[in-house]
Image (cartoon, rainbow, N blue to C red; front, side):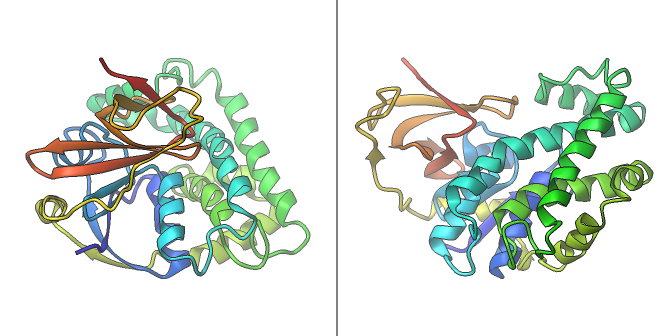
Length: 305
């Protein structure tokens, strides 16, 4: 089978991005629920070391990170498009979206950190090495200003009366932005009201985004998803840019890892190296031979001796 399988947990704003993509396209998909923190043995068995979510599995091809999931869904299901403003501009918002998330994360930490169980705090401290958990209270006013500034950009874009950020239909720009407003409304409702309460175009856009939905979900056991990978063959063809800035070669052993968080590294044989994508082939007892696909933007690729 080659059905879409999403590995994720719903509390994650990054999962919400993937759900929005599936909703825009109205797709049927199966869902493997992952834990919020390690151990994530089944997910790591699939990816070979990467613990982040969402992860999209299609047979023996595994797509890491919401930006690459967007590209792959668009390739397989081009209509309706996720890129009404063009793929380059909307994918460039990935880094802006990360900054918006960081401002919301710091607000959540300042307000909620004392309530977190110690193991969860330690895990998130490890996951986000760029965030100083000990000083979030001191930085609270600045974090509020930054979250408000990001939200004001959305208000300005919507101020001409358009329904969505790139025009009359929802697309990846909306999907990159909405989860952090959603996170704020759920995690720190009173403060979100203070920071967003005088942004009427944003509020109307939020209401429209709630109608996008998530497509049609069916639960799936992790063991079944792993078995599906084991019984499938990757469709990935070798594609290495001869002008690759790192001089990478097909079949070369590399390690791929995020450049901003500690979500885990994956070792494998290089299959794809382009400006937009890195993919490696790896083997594991639980999955057989699979190809793990990453976006190039935001991921390190290091040769392994």
